[in-house]
Length: 93
Image (cartoon, rainbow, N blue to C red; front, side, top):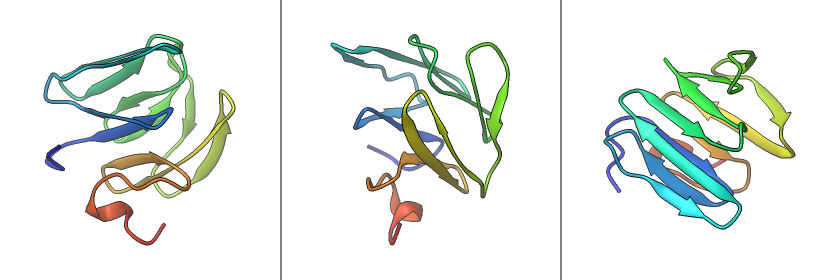
């Protein structure tokens, strides 16, 4: 998977904003240009920020928070679950 653009890891899955989609038994992750949306309402990536599906901001780049039972972090344009690696920028986390 290319690291050009935003990468999102939800429940161990990787999603790219280039139009790919990942489906899992626990729910669906749908991507569009610049937006990564989980239909379960867990994470939405908009302009480098993580917000809930209702538009509430969870945290911005460089901060850590827990939402929907998941602990996530943001590094540049990479969003990933703590303990997982997504893209080169996540190395060492």
